[in-house]
Length: 162
Image (cartoon, rainbow, N blue to C red):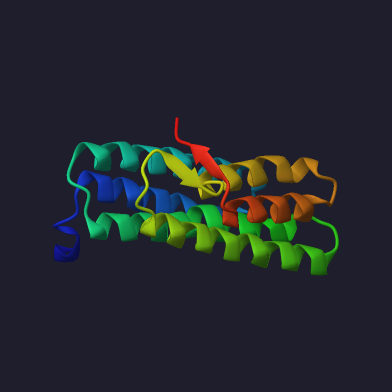
């Protein structure tokens, strides 16, 4: 276990984020709401790792690890969970791929962003949370919401950080 010796608290919080995302992928077909709760828990860990990281020295490793964890929890998990939402299979497949592409583009853009105090595009944790919470109530039209959220993530809309 020497490989993990150099990890800091922020890195462990990031790995907890990823574990929640992986858990959501593993349980969503048996327990949708438990999977949705895991995505929400991933968002809490993402918030906490950011708080801890901002108190210390930011490093490239932590930034990359955070994006990988976010890709699992807030891109892959919601996109795969969309597959059980019901409705037109082709539309769902298109929406899931669009959501995933947009989320990955948003994460890559965030890693390169130098401007502080604003988000460019809808942050992926917000898009993921909205999608997984609203999905069961969309009567087979979750794909429309996923497409809209994907467009917002990939957009250049500037949102002020709170």
